[in-house]
Image 1 (tube, one colour):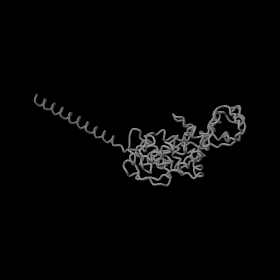
Image 2 (spheres, helix red, strand yellow; image 1 turned 90 degrees about the vertical axis):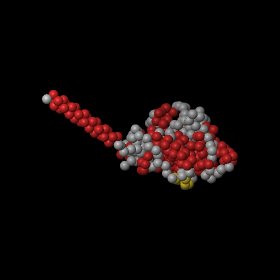
Image 3 (tube, helix red, strand yellow; image 1 turned 135 degrees about the horizontal axis):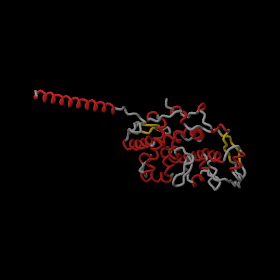
Image 4 (cartoon, helix red, strand yellow; image 1 turned 60 degrees about the vertical axis):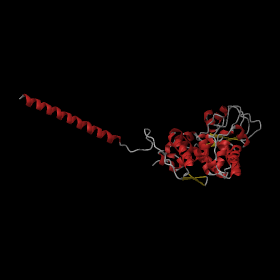
Length: 328
């Protein structure tokens, strides 16, 4: 009788152990199934290598990316563009506002449209941008170069911040460089390093193209950053950037007031024009202070918001400069 009771207890314990083991196995299997998640671009908990194309077009030239050193330099900048999400997203949003201004000026000056991506790399499409060495505006002109190309930089006015005028000046620089190199990749490199430096390095190294030049780190990366920027902005969906029309920064409608005299008080001028000093400054970043002497009687076109509604976000009147930027 005692033996039967002991046998019964042993069998009971054995069954309990088997049931426990079975439950643990099922839980582990379920856990494994839950971890089998299909990778999705945009998931901040996952990291993906970037798909590198075999070639791309830049300024009507085919860039072959099959050579390993060229491919890897491009890949580095492609990763930087894709994993600096906030900077890239903001640049795309700003481009919707400023590309429509820049593109016609490039075209009118016979500069390739792709040079707008140089502007993206220079300033992130931020017209207020100032570098650590003092380069300013969308095109990041130094003061001396700006004045060489016809922009005013003084105590009252800094036209490096004037979007239209600085773009015209940039076009002239780019065309001057093209007359020297006859190659837009070298032109872009010279925008970063200077024409003298690029010319000296071409002669010293006995090569005739950017991709074979051994340059400092910044200039060595510079053209590849432009190429990666162009590629990503033309293939946003492939790299997981999802934007709707309302995400893009909208153009602002302005009216123009001609000024050819001194302005003793820009704040008072703004009020007279039915706006505020803040809005006046935002629309005309080239105005430096609250006073403009204008002793030479120069003519300036001052932008004023076209109406009270010009600054209102209207979902019914959204403009999308590049339809391919919008995720459907």
